[in-house]
Figure: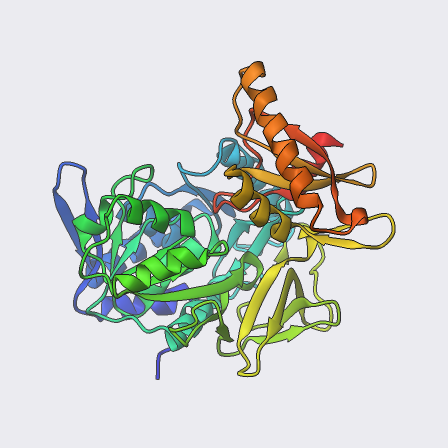
Length: 449
């Protein structure tokens, strides 16, 4: 039975009694360095004493793909500070937003301090503050406890086990719950060696360099590594999360003898709540231990889980009867496996009450046109297709639009008149997307309203 940790402090105490390497780092010149579990624990404990003396309530920790950054994160949480992780790879403006959020969080926390300056009601530990992806609404700050994050790592371990013989390549952003749990915390909690990627902007060579046995990734990362033929022969498992994974990508990995697991979760649930068990159908996922997943009458997925957030910073908890309504659509098959259909807010509701499920249109039109950056929105009650990342050359753009309109007219013949696309917009700007590639439909809609 896998141990279930209740706090970072308990986890770090376990580190101190372990043998083996916790973290491996490398430079682009080919040199490597390693830190044992015992050394890692000593560094965290020592730093936590310094942090306690400073008595800070909220801290922004800039993650630089190194041991010192990880020490800072663990030490600050153990010392009772809330932590926001900033990352050099996130979209422009994120780090400024993190600094502003930290200041707002400090003000919110002032009234919750005890006479020693520590935050009351947190069992001595701070929280991790993560931003939601903001695909359908403005990004919110999610409050996650170390207990919830450790529980998420435990539930993942129950479904997909790692151990001392594994090397996990950590090249996901730790400023997202999926990256924090699956590419770092999970491996450290259960004795694997975590290899920190050498270069956050060019990761395709890291698998051949570190020779991992497990890679947690988003689909675009794995697609890039496959294209560069940069997957090492020791690799046995790829864990896909953060965005829907195209079946051809899964098939290419399986052809190489790699087991593919697909995980489903949200920032609000400390990452994963369902994961693949039947390797012949990776997209069919079983609920993780403790995750009570339900399909509501309108097809929306709701969940109650011990990994649940405390709430959004500065807002009332958004639960109904202890359940969180995810905004995702899904269904269970006869084996009790969860299948995802898409986002509830990826559905456009037309004036007559008819509905359009946008990803179906977008996938079809992407195949027909070869344009990878397209999205549907609703303007004045009419369905509009926006094509981004096109040229700034007006003549060429006009030609692209002319061809696109023809393809849309051909596509419209397949579907009832009320659900047809009425207009096409072509722009040189890329459509707004999250770091994992999901379309920020809310932001796109606001841009053209």
